[in-house]
Image (cartoon, rainbow, N blue to C red; front, side):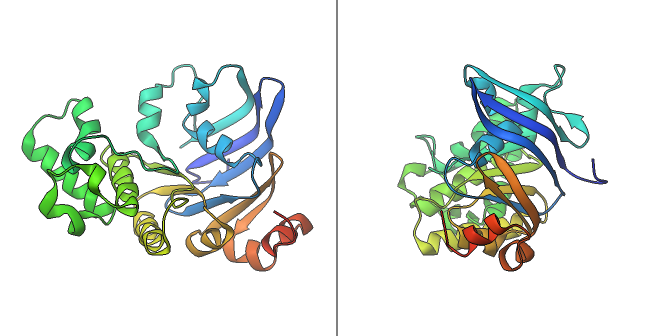
Length: 253
């Protein structure tokens, strides 16, 4: 494990029944940076994200070999609390899914489940999370209105705020801008760049341009394999593998 990595993946293989979805993945992700996982459809990107907070445990017939560590602790250790793990590593999906309640209650929901009931403390948590997701200024005067009335881009930032209210260490984002217009996409990207000051962010981007815009490092996945990874600028301008070059220059995919 390289010194100081937030997440270290060692010889990781993953199977859906007899189908191997990930093949011998070795990857170190440093704290407080944006790491982007890109590649064509069905290359194992979302599968890897879901393994990082063990959402794949919910799928019948899956198995893995190898290890994933967060701060040096194996996430598959039998003593690992899944609830605790998913608080530390939060996931935002491609389609925003606000709860059918007010903006305030959406963000306060997780902390309340964790036993925080004091109104003043909840107010602080909600404001901090909404500020961090760059949504506070847009909604501060209507926190009691339904979250379902927000625009798509605002709903996605609300979903990010909902995760941030649980004070995670790592944010996983699976195509968070796939259904959004360019202006909303730009606001999400600006939000992510702000957030990396405090969080480790791993993103499966909506497209290759997004990968090159927001991330510090990037990994190219193909057919369940990590072909190469490195600084984003290098991966997109001087890739070391012809398959990466073919993909980033649009020859396939």
